Length: 413
Image 1 (cartoon, rainbow, N blue to C red):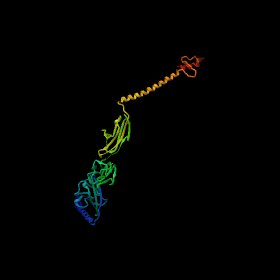
Image 2 (cartoon, rainbow, N blue to C red):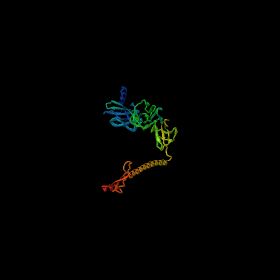
Image 3 (cartoon, one colour):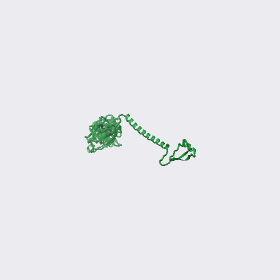
Image 4 (tube, rainbow, N blue to C red):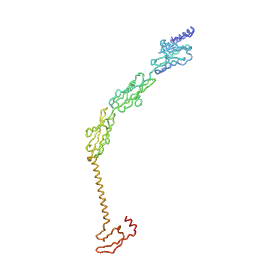
């Protein structure tokens, strides 16, 4: 039976309805007998939503019925509907979440995953012809956020693969992987995807494989991306350097500063040696404020990576010349004494030169073969007579006069 409708008045109405039902059943068996291929439509929906199963448009529908499954059978009936009277009859598969329209459309609200399956619409037209439409519905839950997990948390370069898992409780999902926001489309020489894409294997990891990994779980109605997970690969140390490099020549009491660097992940731990003796100075710098001969030798920086278990080193040579003062004060006094000695010597030389010059100005100008002149100070006695003296006699007196008294006054000053 298609369905049992409530009484609409006279027994004649019931008789007519039963007649239509009989015609419909005969049409169903006829359809199955001739082997007609039904049309099927696929619908996807999410849990909690409302799905609409539409019917093909036709203006002469007399009665229609919806069934669960692909067989028109009374135990599978959801509901039937008589268009002329808008009478609805519910069947065994009716849940209370279904409703129909006069055009044959079926709405199912508050969807559940159990609603997934096939649905059949059987229509009888006023011409006594019948039409069967098949629907297929897939109801999916909204995908929750997956998680990226590492099989091994500590990875060392060139020491085996890295396995990364996209953990999700959903079975009917597609998994996509992203590395540094770039989609991993398929397996390659460096990355291999499992059949279900849930495991990404990085073969023989290197530092280039360090970065951010994410997976995305996708179904037809939703998708969700995992949080970013950073994969780190330990390597090094390598390319250890000391700055300044090479050999250094320092004067006593100069400052010594050495900087050690290395390419390594994680950051290396550093050890300083002087002539192969541990200086007990951790860190990548070594400083001596005032060097002495005790700081002569070969300095070695040893870089060690605790994750890789590897070490590497570099060395420089330091030579110190000169003797430092016993104390800063004595060194200052020595320096000051030298400076004072130099200044005193210079002062003595200058004073001697001044005295010598003055004596030359005040002395008599004498020549063994020439006359001797004796000139008193013109400042004290500007106008006087001067005698011209020759050997053994006195010559004619001479008078020295200053023609311009003003000039004399200026000279006198």
